[in-house]
Amino acid sequence: MRTIKIHNQQTNKNESIKMYTSEEVANKLGVNYRTALNKIRTGEIRGVKLGNGWSVSETALRDYIS
Image (cartoon, one colour):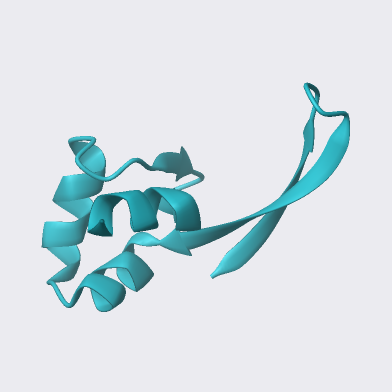
């Protein structure tokens, strides 16, 4: 997990967002890496492409689980 700091222009405050790699998402869900990656790529789990890999915010992962 890594933390990304952003500036929210609406609130004019800095915020930190916890991001998980697709491998970490697979481990948390107890599924194969390819299964997690497919769910992220198709939008079933909201994610963003950062560099060569996909990342999922802690909020997006919680939304998917619930």
